[in-house]
Amino acid sequence: MNVDNSLSREFILNYPSDAARVLQQVSIEHVAALFNELPVEQVVPVLIVMLPKNAAACIEVMPLAKVARLITEMPTSAAARLYRFLSRAYQDDLSRSLSEKKRRLLHRYLMYPSSSAGALVNSDIDMLSENMRVSEAIRQLKHFDHPVQFGIYIINDKHQLVGIVDPGKLLISDLHARLRDIMLHKVLSISAHVSYATLLQHPGWRSHRRLPMVERDNTLVGVLDYARLQEAVGNLSATSDINPVGGFLSLAGLYWLSLAQFLDGILSVNSNKGDRR
Image (cartoon, rainbow, N blue to C red; front, side, top):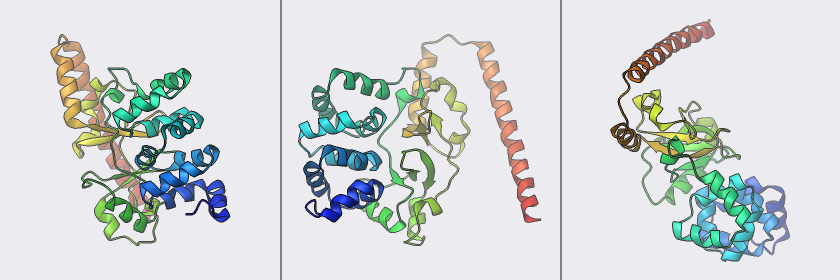
């Protein structure tokens, strides 16, 4: 995509989501060079919808002054998504180039109370856009520096969690199909704002050892690993007195959760039988 080409500029200006999909297939150095030449107001809409890991990799090879202007002009929620994927050293350098007001706003988005699930979040996750074609997704996976073991989370243009895809399914699907057409839509997730001490009973742990974590608006912020949760809850228990009433209530809560899931399964079966009539 040539920045000197008027058609390229019009494409980026009028179709930032499509431009982001195209640029995610291009080398980081070329994208960074393109962004460095374009005005800030044209780059920001593309960065907002790019996969945050791709966007972070691009800006880390751009001049710091330009990146500071981009971050300043971005909505804070979008800037925070990108910020999580920057190296710690680059975060420190970038923070010194931002205004005090922007630093405070970013800190508010990035920091969670120590007792919340968000304090345990692992932001380094695999995600792809629902509008990607299977062929594009396969090419994207080739750029990953690690094997995908737990599935790929699918997000929309607002970075909200909408599904999950098993990497193996990509290899047997129509290359022209969109990820939204082949993904599993029902995904158990965890709110970043709940107390992590209550999460060991989450039904998702029965089949997964990591679960996606979302903000209040369902924006995907990372994952929670079961091992890390166990460790955190164990440390919490070691420093707290055992409350027999609280333990009884926890068992009661687990009973009602199991009963609710059992009834939900029966209702789902009956509903499916009704659909076939």
